[in-house]
Figure 1 (cartoon, rainbow, N blue to C red):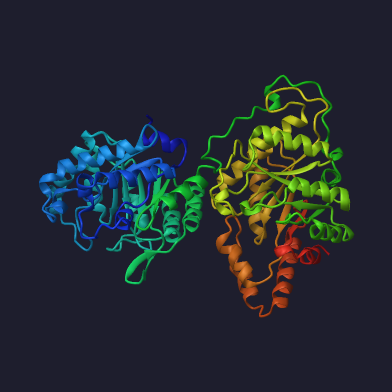
Figure 2 (cartoon, rainbow, N blue to C red):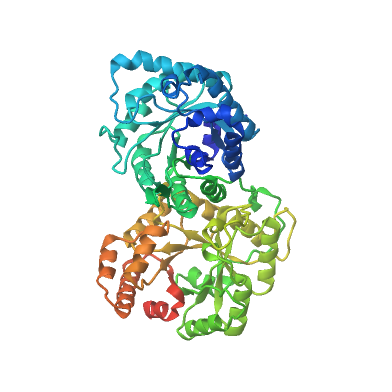
Length: 609
């Protein structure tokens, strides 16, 4: 089995969630020694471990957090130290099976509020050594020293742990302000642990919920080259009928876990208040992310013995492609397919766009993982009934490679020529969170598949003649949390065959221009169509700013929208802002893709008027 460091170098890992929360939920009183349950109620502990493994955890922690001599003495159980730690490893190992790793969980000896004294160092070191010796002898894969508040104690524990020849991770606890109880900042902590040879990886756990944990990780990551893990609480607890309850939903927890992975965190899990439900939702979402999931490798047509075919040039593929090839501005409006079988309202909206001289209708493919009428069927109806070109979004979530190729060939035969290739939102975001995502490939892989079809080769390497002539569009996110990662992904799409890009909604023109300049310096020269979203209210602007990853709404725009007191004023200001954004980037972009918020197509048309 690969080590924790080898695995983390390959992809981010999912750690398990809270043990104490789960034990308490099973009816065990809080004054019980939870570590002793490894012996007195092993079925309970084993069952919790299995729930986390079944939820998708790659790492299972032993139920040994406080199983050191000093803490066990408080329960009169010091003589059972070896038995408790030995059984803790066995229960975790049995549940982990052959795939998951087992972390030897070791907590601090000092209590909250205690001061670390150098005179205590010898006793503390011996206390750690006694517990760690049992965990190491029983075969844990690495040590996870977690919830430490004193950096000196954490370093002392790391030195002892390293003597057993296993990887050592140190996870500290800081508050919302990014400081320990004693006022040491997260930047100082990371600087110390980064230079500690006994520490192989570091992280943060407990103390704060997902949003604050993300903020602290954002401060810490630029300062370390070591793998970084975060295990946040499930928000902040609130008192409900005398009990402290964590009210954050698995979806909320997962959204921040995804953002942390995009930031560069290599391992995410849960601390107080989290359950297998949180880990299951998080694991399903994160394991389908680009850079985490192992996608099918698509070989370029240039690496095969390609058949001799007449490749369709961009200008001949469709009217939209022809305008892009000529350097003329293109316009499109995004209209979402209905949730019912009645296409008439959508077709009526498309007719308004055609009458206004719009070039194309953008048709999303299950946005936010929602179930709607087939976007391909909707696109075929729009082109045949209305006579306006469509830009069909096609995502990798719902179909395997065989099904996707069949759709692409069938759509092309039906007259669809313009596709926007996207990876797609994980199912957990939508109406069917228990659905299984496919993601055989991401947007890079699917762009290569389409490019191959355009050169007469299918996914199996078989010749296709005549080839398809699909215009390949891809998404771009100029305001991504991790700009360098997004830029590399964007350039990979271009190398795979992308011919133009449509961005996420732009509210900061300078961010778009910086992204385009950075791409151009590295050879990323394709037409860019700017995404534009006419805001309708302050609430709408605030939601986009706080809840939609990749969308950055400047404070100045939020302030302008906050001054709109009526619905009409909100829409008027939103249109003004959208027009100003278009004017600011007009010389750099190939056109505009304007969304129709809440189906209000007339707002989109006013922006483009």
